[in-house]
Length: 125
Image 1 (cartoon, helix red, strand yellow):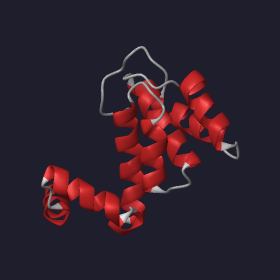
Image 2 (image 1 turned 60 degrees about the vertical axis):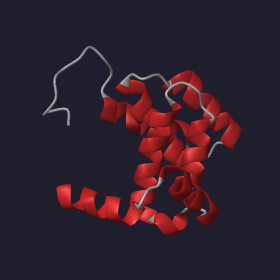
Image 3 (image 1 turned 45 degrees about the horizontal axis):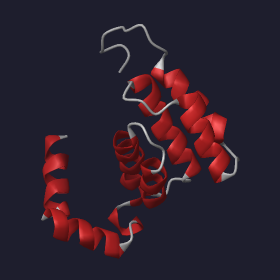
Image 4 (image 1 turned 180 degrees about the vertical axis):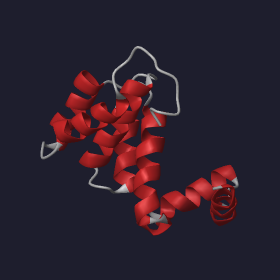
């Protein structure tokens, strides 16, 4: 991505992702989340939100539901951070990793046909 985009005066995102992942590794959940907020940052800046998403993913140990819940409680650009972390984890675990009740609520409230949407997104890929 760095070779295809445009240079900006900001930290290297790939380097910050690796740093953020290691920063929270093995810490108790509350301490890890505190580090994400205070050291990684949770603003809309990509140099913060993308590394924060990977740090959340590390804390959640790849569980998409936990990643979404943890991100929702961070503050800042928590919806973007949760979307990134949840999507990465979900791409590995699949829909079955999410609580059936939560998926049912999502379908009912938003009138989403997740399988058709997934098929359309894969076709665009």
